[in-house]
Amino acid sequence: MPIVITGEEIEELLKNLDLVVESALNGCTVDTRRVSDMQEFYFGSTREDADKIVYQILGWPKGGGKADLLVTVTVLYPGDLGNEQFHTKGHFHNGPDGPEFVVGYRGVGILQTGDRTGLVDEVTVERGTHVWIPTGVAHRVINRSDEPVIYLSVSSAAVGHDYDSVTQLGWKRDITKEVQV
Image 1 (cartoon, rainbow, N blue to C red):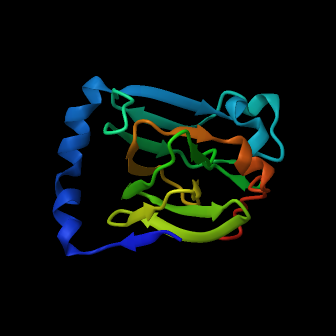
Image 2: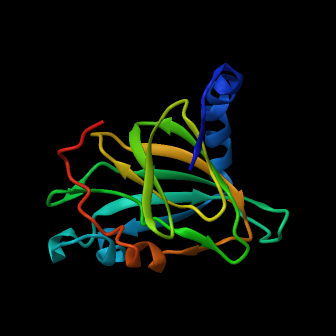
């Protein structure tokens, strides 16, 4: 499934990522996902949980053409609903499908990947981890730590996101605290 790329050749990027992220924040958009936006991705939540922020996606303007890139930084906060840990929605790419490249920046999370038959693999994402997610592979990140998980993603700007298929395939399952990184 995903190809994990780690090594010295990319360490230089990580050394300078603080500067890149800081300078780019001026022109980004911010999409905030709250518990109320993700009810179908958790087994249970209460009205008291509705305003909790699960994650934020910082994105940079895109042209949307086949040759354009979508660059995002996701901040997945620590937290849980009952016994389920916070996680991103998870999705397949639709429209023109394409791969995605993820670079772990801060915190420790689990990147789950799967095909249209279900969950296939899990990779720890932390500072220095690089994961190539091939075309046709669904993915989501789970925060199993006490600090925000922050990662950079790059994909084609022309792809869309299919969230419904992930829930139909049974990815809506208990992401419990018992399995700690």
